[in-house]
Amino acid sequence: MRVGFIGLGSQGAPMARRIVDAGYRTTLWARRPATLVPFGDTLAARAASPADLAAASDLVCVCVVDDADVEEILTGEHGVLAGLREGGVVAVHSTVHPDTCRRLADRARTHGVALVDAPVSGGGPAAARGRLVLMAGGEPGTVAYCRPVFATYADPVVHMGPLGTGQLAKLLNNVLFTANLATAADTLALGRGLAIDPEALARVLAHGSAGSFALNRVAAAGGTLDRFGDRAGPLLRKDVRLATDVAETAGAVPDIVLPAARAALALMNGQNPRGGSGPGMADPAVDDGEPHQLGRRTRQGDGQRHGQQDEVGGRAAAQPRGRGTGGAGR
Image (cartoon, rainbow, N blue to C red):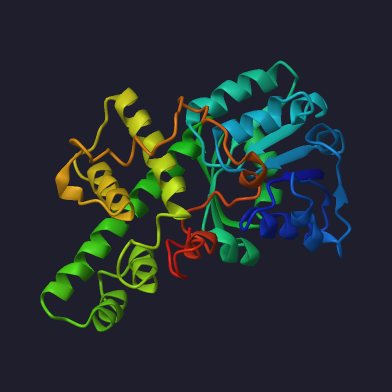
């Protein structure tokens, strides 16, 4: 099988490396040439455009930041669908709205191309070890076709069900992670209020039944969410926004997890989550100062966004720029 990979950020790059190292004929494309430099010692080919990459591939994996990025990469004038052969497959590793995947699958079908949603979680270090968790949505036969490639960087690979269910699982994962950030930070703040050494408390909690990935990230960031806002904040706001829309559309709005996730976003913004969203207190899950349409984010800083990581639990988000060295560790 010939594999194309687009999106060589802090998570996508080690995923692509695992594919190359597994012996697959691999073609890469990147908007920023610098992201291709680490592959100079490999047999991976470089394409001039997504369409050229697709023409040399049977399976195209896309790991970019958001809905607008995925749509442009697939349907642009020189996009993947302009070059992928009939019978080819697109795997969307990005975290996007399930409806975006369904709409793009309909578009792909007119080209004789199948699409699966296959978001991943775990971050760059897990990708390098082949230990991402991958949540796939799509036709069983198509997922089975992709599974050997997915298995180079993910274990487990879980087929969640029809197209879109992989994205639903990923959104729930990220909402729960965000909510856990709030409860972890609030617990450490309570400890400080009770005159308990926060570092000692974090060490104890991490080894007890209260331990969690979110707690570890908060502790590494100094016990607060202050350092999360620059890098992890925009990604988490995106995912909480998408999850809120999906839940409201389905009439399945929860009582606890989404409010807790919004509390975490408020803390990242330096807001008091108890203050609600009255005057001067915007709902951080909805109003982040940028115009939006569902699944069509207004494009800003496009040249940088395609190289970013789409995973809130990994190394990239743990190193927000300009605000210290701790962070969410998406």
